[in-house]
Length: 234
Image (cartoon, rainbow, N blue to C red):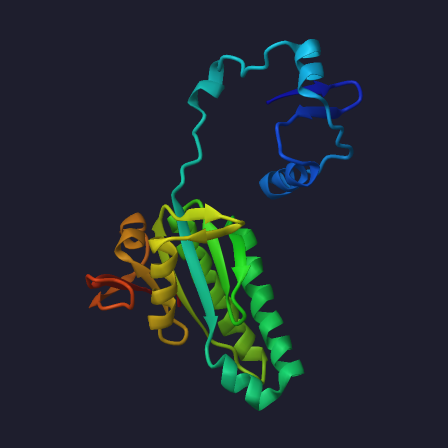
């Protein structure tokens, strides 16, 4: 709602309207990682008595040009190729180690490209990006990381990746809707080591990367054929 900064002590104070302390802490953690040292609950009447009406100051200077975060998100799914047969061949303990290797490489690429893990799917990861181009560059980095891993590992790991961009629905720390469904279907359609994207994603990266048109594809859950594109990453 508002904030203060004590320059002499180097401390900041935020007045937050939240349903509980846990939620307030989580918002800070997910937004920028700076978690409050102390959280003190205050009564609304006490806050109004001390501060009066709390309102945002009028923007000035560069603040007038601030951009508001839109609901647009690029959704990316990764999937380990042959995960079931890998478990049968290697056993549970060793296959878990391989999944951890996958997770580490994917999460490292996500961190570098400002991506966020939405959830782990068991044999893959669902992630979101505020920028579609960043999601594609992240996917390319992931495939390059797996190629390097396979050069040094006796046991090989392959992933397929699918990406779509749109306005998914957020609920209970998860994302839903057609954008999520299409990204998942593209991931399922992809060959090992491939990155498949929708036409919406392709429009965002036009002329920046080598893209091959796969053509219209019939995907489960979608009445109309979907234009699919393959991203070159080597």
